[in-house]
Length: 225
Image (cartoon, rainbow, N blue to C red; front, side):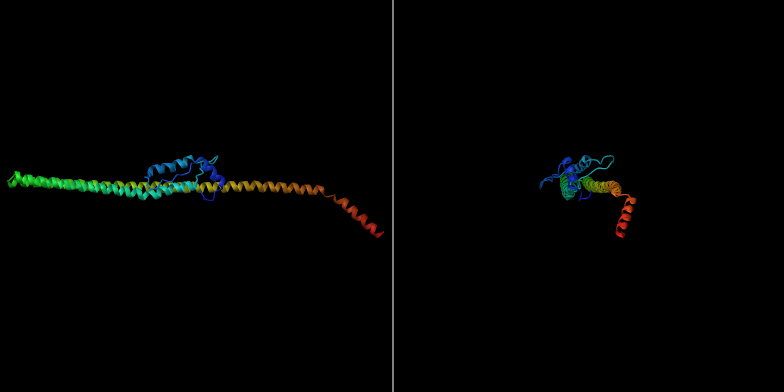
């Protein structure tokens, strides 16, 4: 919808849709909730009679999209913080696993003096360390994949909402142009009808042509006399 809509139209839409309240500074914004508000805004907007089109308040819709756009970096930062926290947890788990392995090695070396038993314990500790390392790397990779998928899905949803809003605005503009053209055509026809009535009235007010000719003849005879 164009930003140059009439004030009356804006007023009607404002009465039906409550104004968008921007989130306070430092407050946590739920992106899904903001997207739901955009959907509710579109569903609550008035419909054009006899059409399937909806009048959407462009200012409010763009403000709501701005809220989502502004808070996307915050969501990404939160996701990065979660990844960082997971990395720290994984690192801590690795350290603990290494400590456990080292403790197992010390205890095995202290308790078992035979070379074969010590080698077997060392192999088991190495296998355990490798298993923990693989599980940590797999968990980190899976977390990164999930975050990237969520980011791509959110970007696609925002693009779909934007395209839908632009398409509906264009359709409304075309409908408004057609309505204005029909109204002007009706006014033009009424003016033509009024002009024809005026012309017919003037013709009726003029004297007949024979009477005008007779008066002109009498005037000439008086001049000759």
